[in-house]
Length: 245
Ligand SMILES: Nc1ncnc2c1ncn2[C@@H]1O[C@H](COP(=O)(O)OP(=O)(O)OP(=O)(O)O)[C@@H](O)[C@H]1O
Image (cartoon, rainbow, N blue to C red; front, side, top):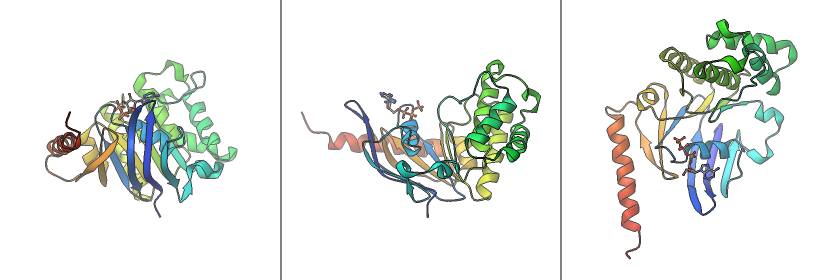
């Protein structure tokens, strides 16, 4: 069974359709990358997958359960980071991670150890007792990632997780993600960085104007060229079906 199964997902804002009949799945142990231009629909897809917006059509299942029916324990097996990292500015880094663990159902006796482990995983030890409001953007992103990982979820949904990270942070995230995937965790990750995607993904889906237009081979020779060829072919196909005025 897929950890995440998205079927015929459709969404629009006002009169503008932003997702058209999207089908996508992520298996346990798989890193599935979603790539596309700005505005292609990646964040909207992820928000719908996490029940943050109610889509106009389609079904999302996490571990076989429709998101609308997922209970607290079910959400406790999911970790996410969408757009800007959520941090409590007045709490320290350590307290933020502890709070994220508790909010995802980690019992009080285990939360401190999980927070400490996550501090080490993301090399945030030097900032552990600093308030989140005083962090740099990249370190705030690390705290946001830590909050997604701290409760050891079985499904990760990460929207452009390398945002604001320095090269060391990108490397840490890659190692963390690959280690979790090797332990059976499913991950859906959006990215603009095709080089990074090639290093982490088992599968790469291209989303363009709200439609999944194809898959790229992460081990292919020229991912960038293949990406542009795919989106241009999709544009051409869309032009051909447009009615003649
Ligand atoms: N709350 C909203 N109200 C109206 N339109 C929206 C809203 N959120 C997103 N959109 C529109 O939906 C489309 C898809 O946006 P989305 O944020 O999902 O794209 P994205 O692929 O994540 O882009 P980026 O790579 O820039 O983050 C865009 O045209 C965007 O302007």
